[in-house]
Amino acid sequence: MSEGVQAPSGPSGRFRIRNPQDFYGGLVLVAVAAFALWASRDLPGMRGFAFGPGTAPRMFAMILGALGLAVAAAWSPTVQKLNGSRSAARSLVHC
Image 1 (cartoon, rainbow, N blue to C red):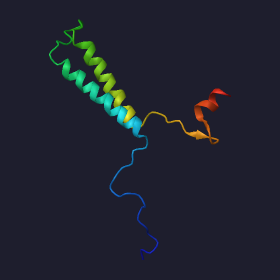
Image 2: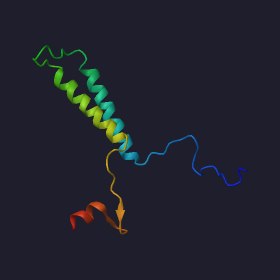
Image 3: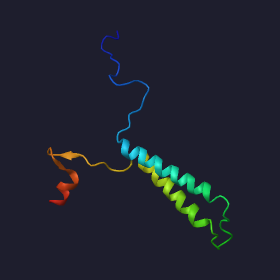
């Protein structure tokens, strides 16, 4: 009945990080953004249409955190090898 069913050959219950450099780099960016948010916690923010001294640091920290999450989630394109030693970027330049 279940003779044809085989378990996957990889480690079970674990996820595989496709590009560890991007993943850990994204986590570092998120950590820097969290530190910037923590460091700017005492600065006053926006009051109506007037920017306070803490508005820009918080805004940049949120943008950095979002970009860090995008990089860690492997949304950044990876360069794959084409034709052995030529990379995809190099082949696009030589077109």
